[in-house]
Image (tube, rainbow over the protein chains, first blue to last red):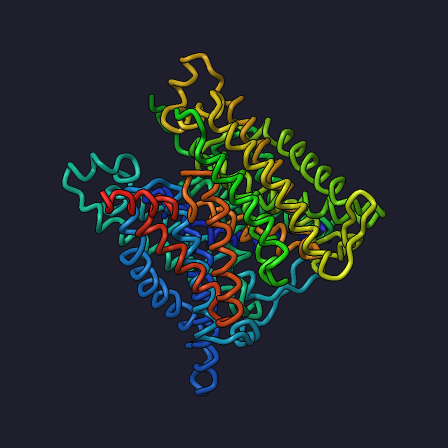
Length: 298
Length: 314
């Protein structure tokens, strides 16, 4: 029983983390049909900048609560600066090429950014533990969980709700849906597709960096964190159905809880249970659980 | 088609030249050569797939599988290079045949990512298996050739001669395959799969065959790599970034010719070796930068330079 509680809570926290990194990826794919490998770099940049800013902030001896603002400030800076550079500098020139080429271009950019991170922040790990220790811990079913990790669930839920509302209930969301449905027709109808692309990519980048920034206090921020997260996010997005926010949510829940179960029950399979699930889902639902329907072109 | 095939003549010439050069090259050149042959084989498999418009981000699966098969056999006391290579190639081919039944239903990005998922399953399994050395991997015994066990510099000379010979056979085989009807079908599938079906060919079957070929080639490459390095480990054999490097070579080379793949593999190996040697902190920056430059400015790959030059000459 206690183990079940642990698995569920751990799974929920891990799912929230997965959702935060997957949602940006799926939105960018849905709108731009770009499978963005640099998502992993944006995540890593977010984590690094957040850890750095939090460190600087507490060194300066400012009021405790403000440290959390740094966790929000970092992703915005990263998303806007890096997102603009990537979209305007690279992707813009490749929209007319096939999907594979774009994936490869982002893979190339990802390789480059891995080294840029090391050039900026060096190879030593960064720790930004203060936010975690400030929030303390609470007890669920007789076990202690730190409140910071639990708050991740609420942050992820908020991000999900805001994305859903933004897409389904605002004018901007409607424009976006039109572009998702048919890029050329939307352009013909007078939608500024270039602007939609830029905004989408920057927003997706901010979400990726937010994932990294929010997780930064709970991990040691060191080189290579982006490599792992990008394949995880891919697995989640593909399991759930690419381009669907609901799919990303269900995908992260399935994957997150399965991994938590594996960690506690059968640690040997921890690393690949995620991909096994993805392969199993795709075997029965080739486009993922919640993929939007597509017309067959002859 | 001309009465004689220029590519075949070129390949035979290159083979003879390299065979002769084998005894003149310094050890480190031969080492780069061996790695080129290993990675080139995988990229050749990807070329076969790419002609149908499919790209796999998971061929490190077959590469790693082949490498580990060869390594495990040497552990069991079997060191004959021929046996190792054939076993690695066939077992990888068999794996591709099995997974192919599932994968042949997928196209585009799903095909690429599902391949990646399978390669990550192998990676995860290797990392967690203590008996296989976990993240450190384990050593591969030096191979023998029909009872002859070379020593000193002859170790690499023999291995290079052996790998080069097999590579020649493989490349000619793939070239002839691509010229055949079944091979010609690849481009048609890429252009319009449904019409190919209407013509009476099974696109799925053609793709499955190509997938098995690419698996065989990747397994072969893995075996050569394992014997060349004398060590297998998950990070440099089965991680998804390794698959990315194979795709990089394919893009670098373009789909123009089987020979181009090896030129691309050599260029890749040189960029990698020198970037790592002279700029160890920014080698990925250099690698990524060159890949990006190729994608942006030379979309058809290095091979297209030849045609561009020919056109410039008039």
